[in-house]
Structures are given as C-alpha cells and as structure tokens.
Length: 178
Image (cartoon, rainbow, N blue to C red; front, top):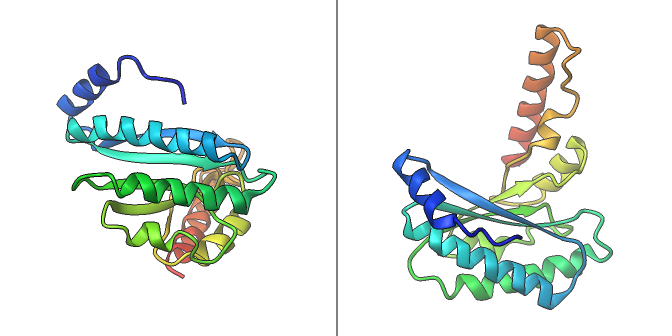
C-alpha cells in the first residue's frame, strides 16, 4: 500500500461530512511472512489514525485467489492480524478478507474483542464459488462486488437487470446466513 501523505487532512474532511469510515486495501500475492507482517502493520497504523478521527476503519489485506500457496498465506495473515489486534486499545475495526480455503478459518478473528465484523470479499471467485465458500464461514458476511454484479450488463432490459441483480442479492444473502 502506498503511503498516504495527506491522510490526516482527508480524514478531517471526511469526519466533517459525517462519513462512517474508510478502508485500506493491499494485495498479497505470495506467502511471505515479512511482507505480510509489513502490510498488516501499515494498515493497522493507518487504521489507528482513522480511529483517532472517530471514523470506522476497514482493514483489507486481500490474498490473491491465485496465490501459489493460499492456505499458507492465510495462516501467516491470520497470525499477523491477531498479533496486531492484541496491541489495540479499546478500538474496534472491521476486517475485509478473501474467502479462505478452510471452513471457519477466521473464527478467532471473528470472536476477537477488537473486531467489530469480518466481511468476505469475493476476490474474483465466480458468484457460485464465492457463495459456496462463504456458506462454510460461520459469522462471516459478504462484501462482494465482482460476484454481486456477475451477469449484470448494460445490454439487459430494466426488468432483466432487476431480476439478475435480485437473484444475485438473494443467493449472497443465503450464503451469508448459511
């Protein structure tokens, strides 16, 4: 993630407009401990600045779904997040994480007292696959964009557009509550 030199000014402006919060996104391509730890530390540090402005922070260290050893990257990420979370005061953050390989993998993060919510990003998985993976994660809810809009097109009639979007929302809702 690139440093944000004017972050405090932007946060002050956002706060004056009544904005709820903001997120930071980094992409993890390989299971490298030092790099993942650096990403998490940077996002948590910026997250603390966001919290000081009375905004909600969303930490999004996305693991690329094509990562050479995604389960190993997930294990490293979870350990780094737990280390950083244990150093937060009383603030709560939201985590936005790529759907993991293993069932209920992020349970420790979901239950952590410094975590308000863990939301799942589809990460490029097709909607059916994203929904299948999400249904294996207790208390993790969808924050899908690519999977949500799958099948939606400017070429659809208004009725077809609404039908496709409604079906998408319904399937994601069901997977979030499985």
